[in-house]
Length: 101
Image (cartoon, rainbow, N blue to C red; front, side):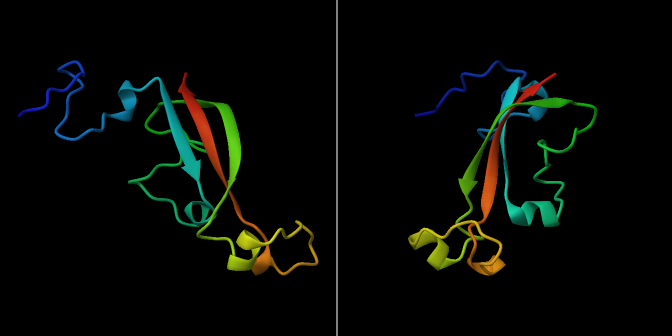
């Protein structure tokens, strides 16, 4: 049984994604590793504009970055003190709701 796309024909693609130019809102995530290596396949909408499109932050929330946070900092409450070595501190990422201007 074929599944019909509910998108208008000009937005329909072969996958479930649409071009960002057709979006009014998007949710972008930023991890510590993302800031170290910019990637053209995963643009940073939080800090940059892309191809003349301008995005503004509506709301941003921090979350625990599991991949970058040490095991002990995930299972035990570790205060965010500077005396604790960096590798044992919790690492935070950000989710931002962005609106196209």
